[in-house]
Image (cartoon, rainbow, N blue to C red; front, side, top):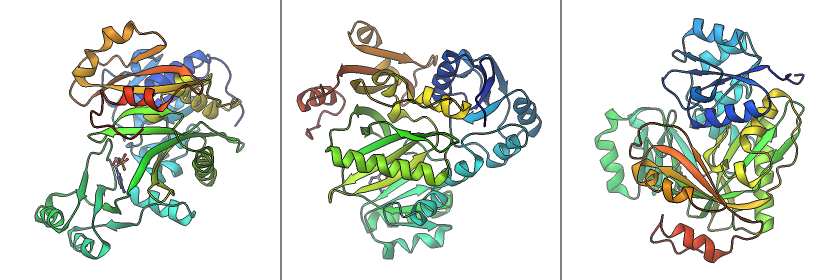
Length: 380
Ligand code: AMP
């Protein structure tokens, strides 16, 4: 694809905060943005030039949206594959529907990673309630996840022992199949790497971040992850390898576990900007959002070098929003709010990037930031 010219229109499917921050990055590069969302109001539409409100499988609306865009991308994966394929008939889409097809279903995702020799936790597809019985043989403890439409830990069941499996079997009829069972990884830490690739095959990745979740939702990311350089290099190589195998065009988050044996195991991939990459907005000259827009617009992909260390905190629900006036007064603290009107429990309202000089994230400092969020934190 040739590069988009200033004033060209980038279409973004999805109206959430990832679309909002992508739209803001696109505007900085001189592009216009058209959002396609099934809800109103949406954080992304507020900062865009145009917005189509329609369902994700409304073929007429998709067609007229596509005819108004020079390239289309997406900010969330739970969109209809059929809809995305319809768009591809009228306008280039990046990443391609093929990648979405792989990543939006945990079964195809694991099949494709396993085929490519990428390490994943032992897993098993469960297509119907009778398959649940095979979990006795598969082995416990394990975690059972819906194959599609799960996010932030939703639709997941942890089975520590036989009594948990029996409880799940008791309401097997109410589950939505297919499901995937995975062995629980005894991990030291969770890390993620943001990787970007353009249509010519140039790939770049950011430093790995270490991620801490609470109630299935990302709370804090530390960049760089406090890991040995060799492990960081391995994590980046895995991410680059996956991006290359998928022929990605755009950005992708690659979530991994660093297990107790020192191995890296891929948890999941997300071919879009990712919450664990928000630190790049203030820790690097070019953020994950701008890199994504550059890749889909056919523009150069310069260095992903980190100029500052960053602790990224998500602002979730009303409790965190109450902290905003205090955060506003902090130095070296970059606040990003998503413009959502109502701070419901568990809702991501914004995030904060606290900056430190490069190399300035000593364990003591990390601990002091993590303890208020995780009172029992004792890792560093
Ligand atoms: P996911 O939706 O797959 O990203 O899972 C949400 C969170 O559940 C992850 O960030 C991990 O903390 C945890 N988790 C998911 N899969 C596993 C696994 N196989 N072993 C251990 N923890 C897991």
